[in-house]
Structures are given as C-alpha cells and as structure tokens.
Length: 267
Length: 278
Ligand SMILES: Nc1ncnc2c1ncn2[C@@H]1O[C@H](COP(=O)(O)OP(=O)(O)O)[C@@H](O)[C@H]1O
Ligand SMILES: [Mg+2]
Image (cartoon, rainbow over all chains, first blue to last red; front, side, top):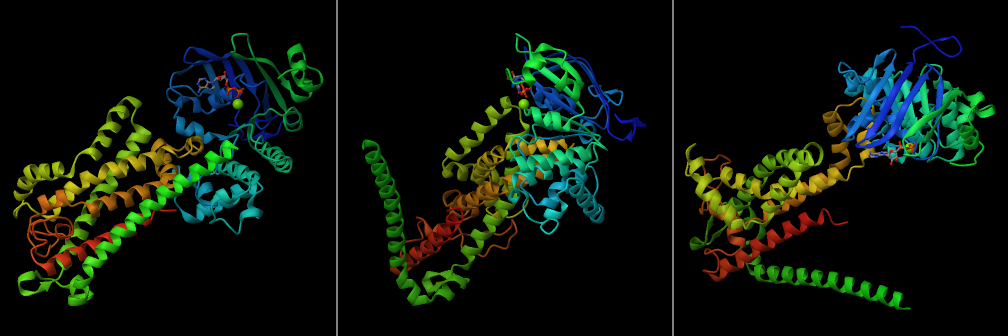
C-alpha cells in the first residue's frame, strides 16, 4: 500500500489510528478514551507529567502489555487500517513491524554482531552473507557503523551508553519495522549522545513512523512533527488533552493545561 | 567512635572465622597426606594410579578400576542430569505459573535433604531389580548413574533457576519487542545471559557427584572389577576405599592406601570447588 507522509512524499512507515481506547491494570484505569491519528513517516512526541500513562500507551502499540497479568483493553488501535488486537493478528509479526527502543539501553550480553543479527535470525534468516549485510546496513542507518565496524565480535556491553542506545536502534531496524516506538530513549544519555540520537531520528523519519515519549520539552519541540499532550484525570486515569502539530502546541496551545505544562508551571 | 569500633570488630570476626575454616582444611589435608605417604614410597605413584589390580593379599595395589568407575559414573550421571536440570530450571524460572512453581520448587529443594542412604536403598530395592531385567546383576554403572543423577539434580536446578531469574527483564523485553517468541527469547538471550551461573550449578553438581559415597556403594556392586561401561558389568569406585568401609583397616599397608585414596579424592574435590572461588 502506498502511504503518503506529512510532506506528501511516499513513505513505507505505518499509520496508526487509535479509537476510543481505554486501558486497565486490573481495576485501575490507566488510560481513558484516547482518540489519536498518528501520521506515517513523521515523528510524534508524547509528553505529559509522570504517571499519566505515556509508557502504558506506547506499550499498547506493540502489545507489550499483553505480558502484564490482569491488564485489559477496550477500543481499537489500527495499524494501516487493521486492528492490532484482532484475533487474526500474530503478535510476533506485529512486534516485528512495530519495534521498540527502551528508556535504559538494553543490548543483549552477546557480541555487537549477534545483537543485530538476533532479530533477523529469529525470523528465519540463516544465510551468513545475508546476515552480514543486514548488520552492516542496520548499523549504518543507526550511524554506528564507523564506530564499531572493527569490533563487531566484541561484547555490546563494552560500548558507551549512547552507542548502546544506537545499537538498540540498529537492532530494531534489522527487522525492518514500519513503526519505531521510543520510550524516553535519551533520559539515560549525556547531551552529546542525545543530540546524535535526535539527528538519527530525523533521518529515520524519512522512512519510518516514530513515536517518542519524552520528558524533555525542548527535545519534543526540536525533533517532533506532531505532539500529543497527556494528563491525569482526578482518578489518575490518563487522557489526551491536546494533539496537533508541534509548532502549534508549543507556540499556540489551545488548552490552558497544555500551556501551563509546556511553560513549566507544573509536571 | 562506636561505629568504627563495630566496623573493626565485624572485620576481625569475619577474618577469624574465615581463617579458622582454612586452617581446619589445611590440617585435614596434612593428616591425610601424612598417613598416605608411606604407600606412595612403597608402591610408587604410577603403579598405584594406573595399576589395574587391587589384591592386597598378593601385594597388588592398583586403583585404576576404582578411578575409572568413579569417572564413568560421574560422566554418565552428568550427561543425564545436565539437560534435565537445565530444562527443569527453565520451567521453574520462565514457564511455570507461580502456583505450580510454589509446589515444584520446595519439592526440588526437599531432594537435597534426603540422606544418601535413602537414595541408595531406593536404588537397591527398585532400580537394581529393574535393570537386572535388561541383563546382568543390576549392580552397574547405569544404576549408580541414575541414582546419582537424582541426587545432583536439585543442585543444578536450584542454582540454574536462580541465575535465570537474575537475568534482567529488560533483556527479555528487548527480545520480545523484536518479535522473538518466548522460546526464542529463552534460548537466544536468557540462557546465554545466565550461562556462567548455570555453569556454576553444573560444577557444584559434579562436585556432589564425585563426592558421593554411600548410595554408590549400595547400587554399584561391591566388587573390585574393571567397569566395561556397559550395564552388564560390575563396577567399583574409589569411594569404597576412600571413606569408611570394611575393606579398609585390615592391614597396615592397606590402611595407608586408604588414606592415599582419600588424598587423591581430597585433591579432586578441592580442585573442583576452587573453580568457583573468586
Ligand atoms: N504493570 C503495571 N501494573 C499496574 N499499574 C501500572 C503498571 N505499570 C504502570 N502502572 C500504573 O499506570 C500508571 C501510568 O504509568 P506509566 O504508563 O508508566 O506512566 P508514564 O510513563 O506516563 O510515567 C501509573 O499510575 C502506574 O502506577
Ligand atoms: Mg514512563
């Protein structure tokens, strides 16, 4: 299917449509009535105070919350028009299509090469040449190739924090996802490493749909095309307060709460 | 002030306790080697270790048969115990719901507390007749290995399980988020991350296997013959000589030999344990 991105270019990144989404941990409602249209091949930032359900929302998009005992979902999330909670959807395929980068870099305690080759191998790629090509391409896309090309056999744990996070991004790219989810990917990194990741995100946004949760207002303003502001309701359920293009949210917010939050009056 | 005092006190107490156990170990070693030394000079190390015949009546003192028996039993039992133990650890740590785990885990731990005589007895009463159906007397390497396997399983299982549990959940999440299945995650990420702990469990289990005496004597047959690695033959291990059995102490020379077997066994054990000292 041909998808057009923000700027009218064709794009292989997936579009996500969230309809009347409610999410519960047991009896506790973590998200209430979320409706959201996320464009393909763009960066969408999710901001909001701690505990408002940003991570929970992100983890719904690749069904990582399936693993949590007692969690429950109402409503639908469509990826390219298909509900990801549909019984016919294979969660393994979904996660291959919707990759995730975590807050703390989590490279596996194996070699750099094996870290990147892990995903493709699980999806049936066994040919050594093919794997080498994938590893090289993924590392190049993640702007890490030049730094590690001479030590692919070394443990990934020996890399710096910023390098580890880019390795994790390369690992996600290795399975050719449409969407990349990032949960505060820079919160454990220094400013230089953060800038590198932001540059990388801008490059990747040409081909991938990126959704980033961030605590850092400047980061959201710098990198994202659209921004969603979440907040807790009195019963602590998270809900979407305002959603729009990043420039509008930051310069001309419609909701008073958004304005208070981005000007640092709370949160 | 008192804080520094308790700090110092704690340091000395720990130091003295540690040192005492070391001294005791050293004394045991000295005693065993001193008692065994006469035999070394009379027979020679080579004939002793590689001699095939043990017949004190005609001055033949070779313990090769016993060494081979020990090694064979250890190897065969580990071949059975390692895959089973790791599989069980995976079940307990990754697969079983907490209800099943709360039953299985204490059951496994209970196995450690059962005295080896009981294992020997069960082996003698149940396994020996069973295996004699296949052929031979039933007192065999196979019988001994099975009993030993059951005895080392708890060690391998509980240490492996702990190390699998210690693998950070971020590794599992990372793998699952790449679209790996649960089994792919376990095989590709969790087990490699836990391999040093699993290795320690295997080594500790092996330590127990090599050191086990009582149950072995009961199920391996009390003869001094070369094991032929089949279940038909009877085998015999150094254990009989190394730790309290009627054969020892008949003859002064023999007694010295017993001590030397012990010295050898002691050496192996210390060597083994030292693998996982820091
Ligand atoms: N596994 C869980 N079980 C129960 N409650 C959870 C779980 N994870 C998060 N929560 C709760 O859900 C709410 C939203 O959490 P989270 O999505 O992590 O917020 P954020 O990422 O915006 O800080 C919080 O109140 C949190 O306590
Ligand atoms: Mg969070």
